[in-house]
Image (cartoon, rainbow, N blue to C red):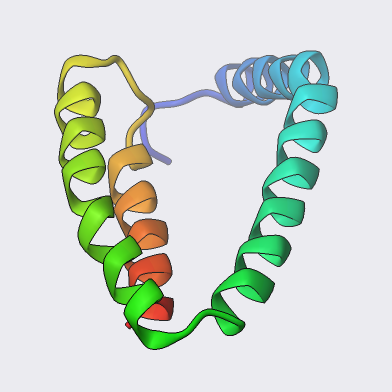
Length: 96
């Protein structure tokens, strides 16, 4: 084992379960919101003409840089910035 006792692992899992239960409704709400936004964005982007897509892509870079600076100063969970950049890259690719 890795230095954890069975009791330690049970305690950890109990804590994780309690945290998830406490935040489950909020997580579900945010997930539904993101899914709906994603759907609408994909429909909008598929109906845009190339010059409009290019202008939106160009205008997005300044805001992306601002958000990245804010993330550098914020206490975010591990992996958040990487996940966020992955989503931004996917959206920018859809605008290409």
